[in-house]
Image 1: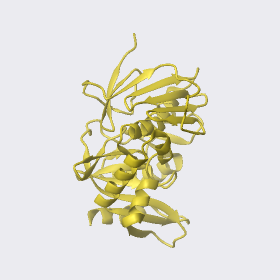
Image 2 (image 1 turned 90 degrees about the horizontal axis):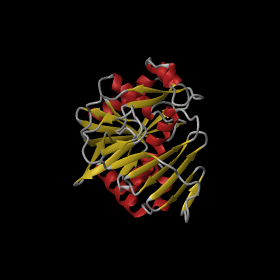
Image 3 (image 1 turned 60 degrees about the vertical axis):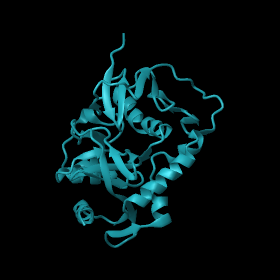
Image 4 (image 1 turned 30 degrees about the horizontal axis):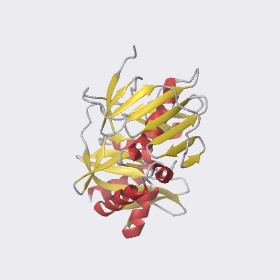
Length: 300
């Protein structure tokens, strides 16, 4: 008989057949999402959209990661995992908690942003941007200043009336080795995200931080040909497009039949909070300079 573990992540109560040490412990109430070890088909019949490693149709998403696992997210309430022989458990969890939970969030009609987030005096501040823009590094730098990291890479947003709120994600962040060295942050060799990567999982969030937080601001981090850190507050269509483009796995929308709902969520989110673009130079820069500039803008 399989063991069952209970977790809380992204506002979902989770019942899982595999242990997920990255997540906060759940309260054991009725599960919103069940994670099972089960067979996943190689081919999704009548798929509406396919890409490298993934197949989609409404309420059904299959992700295949060679030598790791096949995953299936169904109806927003079930995830099936079909591991390949010899796959390491950490790699299995990495793809589950990122791409698969991103697809599941879209199925449930919430807004997963490609962003890390911190708790700034009881309000959430998000750091969004493309891969390598410094989302996780910036969030952890604020964590070192006493502002707890609430999510890494994915920040799930829901609305309470007209107020966007963040639901905490995993308690671990993923950081490249050069970022860890820049932050002087401790890490362990056994905590590599995947055996072949110079990227590590480090614990940054508190186990007791489960309450949703109202969103205060979102910063879009970019690297550009500028002489020093530049800041621009986005409004109107620019803010909307920034939110839309920084949605986690936005390419899934059409296949999942979620484009109209996604449009509404992006519009409401962009209209309700300040969206600020922060550009840093292509040339060497100090992280402290970027963090100090952002800190002043958060406080203002």
